[in-house]
Each structure stands twice: as C-alpha cells, then as structure tokens.
Amino acid sequence: MIAKRWNGIVLLFLFMLPACAQPPVYHWGEYEDSLYLRATDTSEEAQAEALKMLESTIREAEENGSRLAPGVYADYGYLLFKQGQTQEALLNFKKEADLYPESKYFMDSVISRIRDKEKS
Image 1 (cartoon, one colour):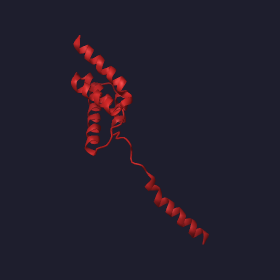
Image 2 (image 1 turned 135 degrees about the vertical axis):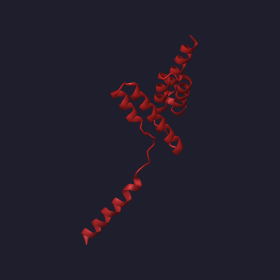
Image 3 (image 1 turned 120 degrees about the horizontal axis):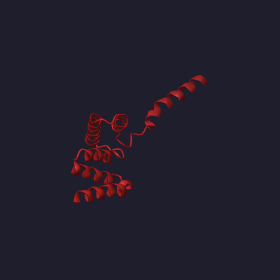
Image 4 (image 1 turned 90 degrees about the horizontal axis):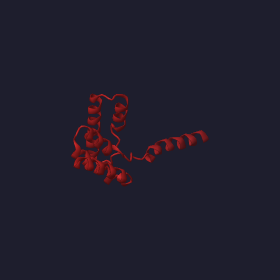
C-alpha cells in the first residue's frame, strides 16, 4: 500500500517536472561556435565561415521572433568592419546598443571612433 502511494507520488513528480522548464531567454544559434572557430583558426576562410554563422544566427532569431544573445550584433558588426563594410558594421553596432542598453556606452565609443577615422 505504501509502496504504491510512493510510486504514484514519484510518477506525478516526473510528469510535472517538464512543466517547470523555462524557454530560453536568448537565441544563441551558432554564436559560440563562431567564437571558437575564430579563436582556433585565424585564416580568412575561418573569418568568412564565422560571418556566415552569425548571419544565420541573426536570421533565425529574426524569423522566430527570438531575442538575440548579447554581443551577437556587435561581433557581427566587427567582422563586417574588418571586411571593409563600414556602414553595415555601424548599423549592427547601433542595433547592439539599442537592444542592450548596458552596451550603449561601449558601442557609441566604437561608432564614434570609426566615424572619426572616416573623417580623417
């Protein structure tokens, strides 16, 4: 009798446990993989592959209406800047600052430095 009651309680607990799971707050996609790739391979091919990975991550988040992980737009902008796509890079730095106000000071500083460099 007591064993059946415990079995029932355990089963009930096991069925209720998944209901407590929270959906992820951020969409990470391949962001971490792109960072690892660039850390372990500095070739131009690796940089291009990392750029594609970030493009895919951003596209997936936008299509799903998910919130992109902190740093993705900034990292993507950095890779674009390295490729000479300054205006696209600035747009992504601005997106990062808008999405994550805690990064605004840093992103504004980066944007300012790029614009100052363009003027000279």
